[in-house]
Structures are given as C-alpha cells and as structure tokens.
Amino acid sequence: MKRTVGAGNQITEGTIWKQLLFFFFPILLGTFFQQLYNTIDMVVVGRFVGKEALASVGGSSGQIVNLVVGFFTGLSAGAGVIISQFYGARNADGVNAGIHTAYAFSIAGSVIFMIFGLFFAPGILKFMNTPEELLASSSIYLRIYFGGILFMFIYNIGSGILRALGNSKLPLYYLIICCLVNIVLDLVMVLLLDLGVAGVAIATVIAQGVSAGLVTRALMKSEDIYRLELRKIRFHGNVLKSQLYLGVPGGLQSVMYSLSNIIIQSAVNVYGTDTAAAWATQGKIDAIFWMISGAFGVSITTFVGQNYGAGKFDRIEKGVRTCLGMDQTASVLLSLLLFTFRRQLFGIFTNDEEVIRIGTGIMQMIAPYYVVFSFVEILSSTLRAVSDVIFPMLLTMFGVCLLRVLWIFLVVPLHPSLNTIVINYPVTWTVTAVLFILYYLYRKRLLWEKHRN
Image (cartoon, rainbow, N blue to C red; front, side, top):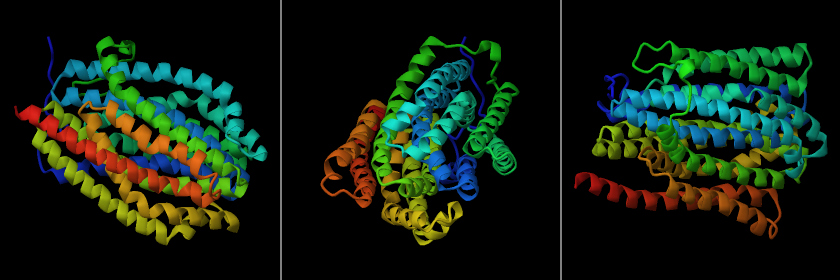
C-alpha cells in the first residue's frame, strides 16, 4: 500500500517570491562555502607556494575535476527531481526508494571515477597541453583528489536529497563546518608540513569526508517519514530507470560543457604559465556568478518539481517569471561588482603583476554578459523539473558545447589571440539563451494546454 507524507517542507503554498528567497539563500550560502574551501586551496598555494602551484591546482587539473564532478552532479540531479516530485505528490514509498537508490548509485559511481582518475590523470594532462613544469604537481593533486572522490559524491547526493525535500539549511551548516576544517588543514599542510599542492589536496579530501559523514548522519537520524538506512541501500529498478532518464541527459550536458572547457583550456595553455594561472584565477572569481545563478537554478528546480507533482501549473509559471527576474537582477549587480573590483580580486590570489594584468583583461570581457546566461540556467532547470530533459540537452550541446569547439578550431586560427578565445563565452551564451527562450515558450504552451484540457 502506498504511504503518503505530510506537509513537511513543501513549497506548494504561500507567497512565491518569499519562498524562493527563503530556499535560495541557504543554497547560495552553502554553494559559497563549497566554493570557498576550493578557492582557499588556490589562495594558499598561490600566496605561499607560487604561481606554478596556483596553475596546478586550478588550471588543467581543475577542468578535469569539473568534468567528473559535473557529470556525476548532472546524473544525481535526476534523483533530486524524482524525489521532489514524489514529495510533492506525498508518496512516501517513492521518496524512500529514491533516497536509497541515489546512495547506491553514488557509491558505485565513485568507484568507477576513482579508478579513472588514478590511472588516466597524467595522460589527460599531457593531452591538454599542460605546461611541462606543471605536469608532476597537477598529477599529484588529481590522484589524491580522485582517491577520496567517494566523499564528494556522497555529500553531493545527500545534500541534493535534503534540498529536494525542502531542507536547504542542513547542507549549509555542514559546509560551514567543512570549510573551516579545510582552511585549518590547508594552513597546516602547506605552512607547517610544507606539503605544497599535495597538502591542499589532502585537506580537501578530509574536509569532504567530514561533510559526507554529516549529511549521511542527518538522513539516518531523520524523524520525518524519510530515513536513510544503510542496510537498505540498493538499486530500485523503476526508480533507477526514472533517475537515469532525467539524470543522464544532465550528466552528458555537463560533460559537454566540461569537454568544451577542456579544449579551451588546452588553447589557453599554449600561452604559458602566466596565462594558465590567470585563467585559473579568473575561473575561481567567475565562480561567484555560477554559484548565485546555480542556487537560483536549484531553487526553481525544487519549486517546480514539487508544484508539478501537486499539479499547480499556474503557480509554476509565476514562479519561473519571479525566479528569472531575481536571477537577472543579481547577475547585473554582480557584473558591476566584478568589473569594478577585478584588480583587487585578482590581487587576493597572487602578487604577480603579469598574471593580474592578463586576468583582469579576461574578466573585463566576460563580466558584462552574465545576465544573458540567466535565461539558460532558469529555463533549463524548469524544464528538467517537469521531466523534459532530452531536447534541452540537445540545445545546450549545440548552443554552448559544439559552437565553442567550432570556435576554437575554426575562428581562433584565423585570429589567434587570447581575446579571440575569451569572446567565445559571450557569443555561445547568447546563442543558447535565444534557443532556450524559444523552446520554453513552445513547451510551456503545450504543457499548460494539456493540463487545462
């Protein structure tokens, strides 16, 4: 007999903008601390080890980590959508089957990716034209990171489950704790033990282990209708099929993003260590935008998923408009902030004037166009929440990924320069945003008419 859940943390009632912001801020702060403990690694090695270590942690190795983490995050997003839909429909059996299947998937996936990282990291770094002086330290960083990747997978899936159920506060609290752990360990490993790049990798793995333990304990100690039980972790066939149907397109989409970025990173590496360090630093500063826009994306996914499960289509439409407006407002303000204080921000990571000069030039070209990408983030998250994943994936793969690759291989050779590489991002964001706006308007009309009929 199918059990049902109570009201819990549902967001199917109440003032839309207040609920979106109430859900958004813990996610934003959580993402901030997640980015912070990764950024601290770069700050510590950049200030106390050197620009070579800075490029090793955030350059080619950072792109590889983003590829693997992004792929799994995309896959696990399918679990969050399914769980939020079950929760909105008050189907307790579905919620619990989703939780245990998601954990089984994360454990199995971590083993595969750990083996991949340990054996193939050096070869991939060479393929990416990583400067010779960075190969050894980048390989060390990657192998240590992948050795502990289970912890990162467990934390991501566990916090995603909590957010899908409307609890965005606990992941935030745990990330604050882990960020503090990572900062302390970074300083100990680099300044006291003189372990350099290996030290910050070890600190990151330990901090992720703490976060994985905390989020798992929270799910196991839940007094609500859902509860994680270790002995029940297994694959539930129908639930796994649904999670993969929604997750695989997102995972492939993320992989295509990362592969295109890896190709771009390879083109950037040709310009030497200074440019590689500037690009890596810009990526960490740029992450401020991605964490804000991503937090809005997670918020609207959960909001739409629960309301879709409850059949409240008018509320979905209002929520999408509201969230899009908030994301665009935040994007404009952030663009102004980063554009104005770009030199001061780069100065946090390094004292090298040439690295700062190159990095601020990159930021000057990218920052004004953040607002364009807000359309892609919000509309793709909305479509995913109503189980529409295939065509949005194709749009992204064409608009962002394929066009970026074509740009690198066709346009850059005609006008070889770093600026030609950088302008790739605003161009592909604009094309993809237009495609998503057109498809969303078409899909919304069909879905809403079907519902009303």
